[in-house]
Structures are given as C-alpha cells and as structure tokens.
Image (cartoon, rainbow, N blue to C red; front, side, top):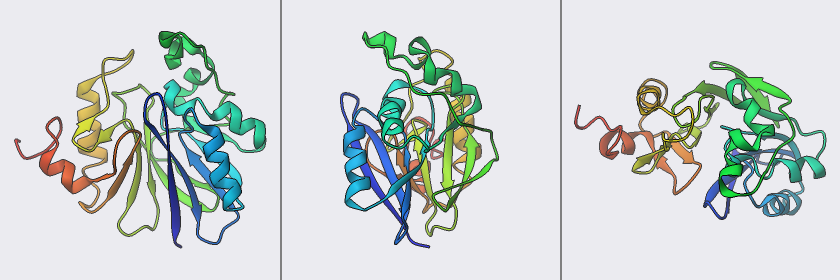
Length: 217
C-alpha cells in the first residue's frame, strides 16, 4: 500500500501537522492538528477525503489547537492520544495555552493509547511507542509496511535536536532513554517526520545529533 503524507505548517510555533491517507483511498487521518485547521480541511477537500481520525502525539497546545475545528467539521472522527497526556486536551493549564495568554481546549479523547498498542486509522496500521520526557504521555507512531519505515515523532527527536524538557513533567533522562531504546532500534533509513522542522532519519541522528547521538558514546 502506498501512503501519501502532506505536511501542514502552522504558526506561531511553526508546528507540523500531517495529513495521511492510502493512495486511492477515501479516508485520511491527521497527526497533531495545529493552529490552522482550515488548511488541513483544504487538503482533505482537495483530495476528496473524509477525516477518519485525529491522532495526537502529545497534549501541548500547538499540537491540539486544531482539534476543536476539525471535530466541528467531522464530528465522527475520533481523537486518539496517549493515556497520560489525555487530561491536557481539556485543561489550558496543562496544555500550556494559559502560559501564552489564550485558553485553548480540545474535545476529550475518544481512545487512549498505551505503549505497544497497534492501531488502524483510515485503513493504515501503526505501532504506538511511549517516549516521555518532553511531556509525560508523549507517544510516537511507526507506520506499518513502509520502506523505509516512517515515524511520526512529535516533539521527541528533531533534525539536530530534541524536544524541550523544561516543561512540567519533562525529563531529559527519560527522553534520551526513550530515543535510544524505542527509536534508535529502528533501521537507519527510517524517516522521522517531526513536530517542528524538516524531516530527518534515524541514522542521521545517531551519527550527528549533539544531544542524543551515539558518536560520542
């Protein structure tokens, strides 16, 4: 199965959302709807797609701000998020929107995800890996059957960087451990689609990442 992935960047945090569907399919899901749900809806409309799921890597505001708008347009699209971060959806203090002077909430989760879960959304299978450190309940998604593999990594691993660990519940130790045990076990050619910035690969970050790379170990 060929999978199509269209990124949508939204401001003010340059956050990457991803619209994902099987080539020729009629349904899609979106990873981490940011502050531009209209642009996401336009991708769906242009490609004649129905939204079958809203999939969140974690509960910070820049990754859930579009949930409400998309739910309004597609009320039957379930929201999926890691179990530990689920309370952040409905609490501006927890999702950090209150920190920036605007209270944003999302509808509550329809499905809670745990480490090791296997899920299928819009006919596309993914594995769930819990990697805390940026947020306590952060999860990443590994697409099944893609060559090379593809990871929707949220704010865990970036090109040349890692997610911030100074937010409530953050831990660099946990983040580093999770990257080494649950991302660096994937093939070097694995493509990582992060929540901010350009794509990268597991091999590139192993070799060159100044925070978690293996070259200095």
